[in-house]
Length: 70
Image (cartoon, rainbow, N blue to C red):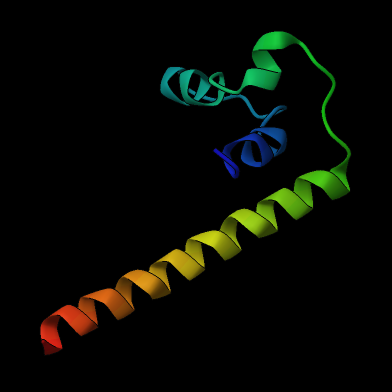
């Protein structure tokens, strides 16, 4: 939900196959015809999404480790 709009920004001028076009066509910004956000806002959103994913991965690993030890 957070990373997809940023990836969509990068591939907006790339000619893709039908499945790629369908996948990247799911972005609400592309459907509504709204203006694209400023690059710095996209960058910050991309970085936050990957930080959240990394934190959740570490938490999941810790929970798995704890469950195996008990």
